[in-house]
Image 1 (spheres, rainbow, N blue to C red):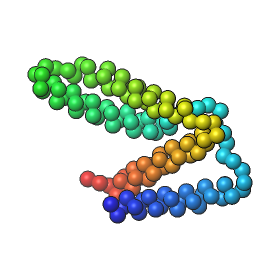
Image 2 (cartoon, rainbow, N blue to C red; image 1 turned 120 degrees about the horizontal axis):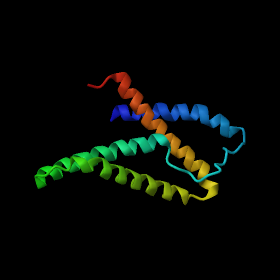
Image 3 (cartoon, helix red, strand yellow; image 1 turned 90 degrees about the vertical axis):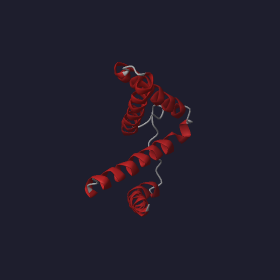
Image 4 (cartoon, rainbow, N blue to C red; image 1 turned 30 degrees about the vertical axis):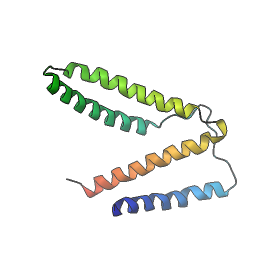
Length: 127
């Protein structure tokens, strides 16, 4: 838990150092011309997580039913991932135009925090 707060602190400090001068200039961030969508990185993370859960669920279900469901794994995973991503993009498309830059910046902050944890795990070399 201590490492979580350390990484979070580093991300917040870096964001404050690099983002605050931009806002101090008195300029607004660029307004997106299209509705806000999930960043590609978050879509990939959702796809990996859902793929793992669906695969494990199908393994358990195939053992319970004593039949082979491995052929259905890719189709079910693809449909669930697509549905979840469309759902989140539909929610984000309802964001008012005035709030779109803030939401886009918030999503990129989430990507940055998750990336920082990934870099930390890679550098630490968890076994």
